[in-house]
Length: 452
Image 1: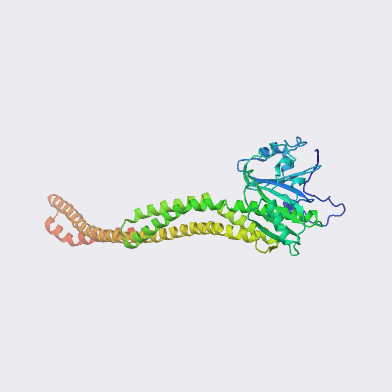
Image 2: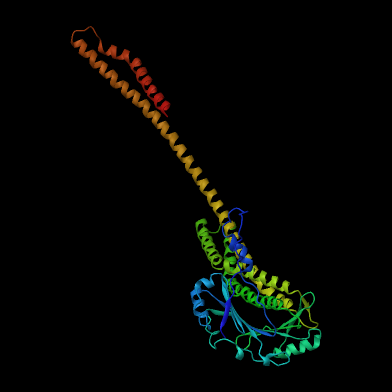
């Protein structure tokens, strides 16, 4: 049971000769090779595919490498071998495939179907013949999200009644969903979407003997991805349900605040504080859960795409896989979408209510500012009147002091023998002094106003 090889991404050899193109754009080779990043398996029927998808939150590539190194002959695996998020290990009679995605990692083991599990047997046991160490599956790092045992075998798909009877017995006589896949009905897919005590689901593909290995690989990939992305999409449902009480309470509080804004029964600052609290609550919920809602939508779109790729036809009396998915998955997705829309709408409503209240606060503030300006204007007018009165008194006082000085000068001149009558001279100077002081004061005012 020695490994034969790993499967890297195919890279064509460099062409020799003249250079015909400009230099490559950044990541051109990486982007081009992305279409080859996860090639479909080639599966030879009859085959058993044991598939496990685990959440890889907190699990590093080094952790997954250490687990892959526990496989026979893989002790020399390096981190570089996991750099493309895809690795296929080929052994003589089985393959092990590792794929890492953003939120989960999936492991697929493809091996021959045990003889006791061929079509015609009833609810056969499948894991006892697994070609891996007994504890390797249980030691996969991460938490199990999807686990599927997919049996792919040959059968006569033309006999509808016999095929359904054999498929129902093989799956354990449970209620089945079944689809005839492909435009030409190249194969059947049957499942009951039930978890067994082992933790695995079971799927059964019945195909005619001329089914190619590449077609079998594509069919298995679509079915396994369909169930994986269905479960990943449903991760948004518990989140949506947990948010419903918070959204209901927030909507009720917002309605109360809006009514109080209309009635004016509470102070504006108090209502603004309440709106700020509601806005913080909604923004926190958005930050915590926006990624999950977006991921749910993306996963759901992949599910719909995989269903379309099956190109199903109904088996009389039985739901197709697509019908089963749509009827049971659509309500959950509608709940998630409605919750995401409700959260976004609530954020917008809080923003509008806050803007409305701030507008009212701004209007009230402007009215207060207008009243303050009017008071300041009246104060300035009174100050100007007082200043004019003071200036008039100042002119009289200055003139009085000037005339008093002139009177003293006249008295001094009379005492010195000059023919002067001091009182008459002082009286005659009063009009001239008043005019001179007034004129001087006016010039000073004119210069001050000119400077401004």
